[in-house]
Image (cartoon, rainbow, N blue to C red; front, side, top):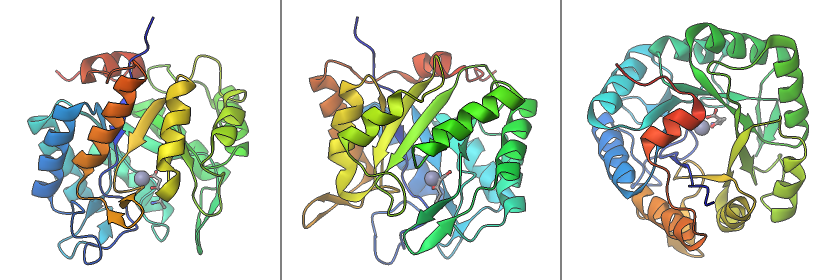
Length: 276
Ligand code: KMH
Ligand code: ZN
């Protein structure tokens, strides 16, 4: 039996500057039209970071609420807000993201060196995020930047119970300078430590995007792609749009005889509440 491929688009992130990457969607209009086009190509989930009027990363609650509403109105995608934000965002702002009531939110399983910066995720903060998502019925995507963070996830689930909906979904974020490498070997070594019954997607940062995509497809995993993670399509060739990355992922998924999973099926798999 073929397992369809859940494709997540991560179109913006918090790291690239619009002035250096003009194709990055930073306004609400740009985000919504990107979301619509990526959905038409085969994406089922959107992982969202937003920007302010000057295109700087922000966790402004009003803007987050407007973004969730617009994406719900104009797409059928599962809306996943980032609680990771930017490395400089305080914990209080990151927790407040949940007040925008997304379908899903990211929940990172530990602190990691992040290039020259540190992406801080203290144990107490992780517990708070997980617990608040449980209380509010927001389905987490557990972000894993290094092997040991899977052990942290198992500890979290053992001590504080399963997530909202009961299904555990993990995203392996590979190739961050400071985290696990974006290689097939690293991906395979993560499989042993996944919680029982968990599904996983994987994304490779920068030039690890293709090896990670192929490794994930062959290991039964799902895919996350987008300009949050990759701004080069090939050596010396900047990404033209998020749609270009989704189209490539869909092509690889079809070659692997694992066609894109429609959003309705993804909602059932991830135990995300259906809307109204
Ligand atoms: N921007 C990174 C510091 C997430 O979205 O939850 C964190 C990140 C993970 O992108
Ligand atoms: Zn993110």
